Structure formats: C-alpha cells, structure tokens
Length: 106
Image (cartoon, rainbow, N blue to C red; front, side):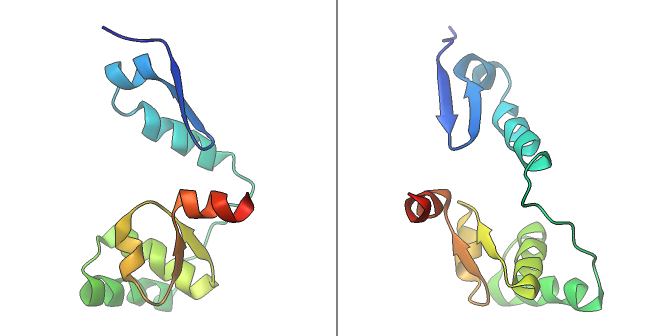
C-alpha cells in the first residue's frame, strides 16, 4: 500500500510513495538540491587538506568521507551543516544540525 502524501524535510521533498518504492529517493533529492545550491564551493586538495582527514580519522574515529568534509571545513573556517553525529565529535570544527541552523535563521 502506498500513499501519495508529500513529506518535506527542509528544502527536500519526496512523495511518500517514492520513498516506499525507492529508498534512495530522499538521497537523490538532496543531491539534486546540492548541485543547484549557490553556496557550494569546490576546493582543491592540497597536501594539508590530504593529511588532515587522516588526523581526524585517527583522533576521532570518524568515517573517511566525514573526515574529509571536516578537514575542508576546518581549513576554510566553514560550518558543517549535518545531522550526522560524527561531526559533533570533532573539536576543531563548528557544526550545526539542520534544526539548529533553521532555528538560527528563524
């Protein structure tokens, strides 16, 4: 049984029937949003950016992908917006959940 109701999580919206049939619908919606976001910046990977993730992975036990995101944020002085609890472990970066961000913008 599927329902055609729309559910929304921040700027992402997926029909409930899509998520029941396709578990990757929410992920694709977020990727689509990120591709068109005006505040996304590409970064070059230099030696410091390549070494820092290893330090974060060893020190905090976070996954490699999260370590790279954290390293880029640390070196750029950026804030990580994520509901992933791994980022809260890394003392060298500022991180907000989506809810925390929305409450600050609110």
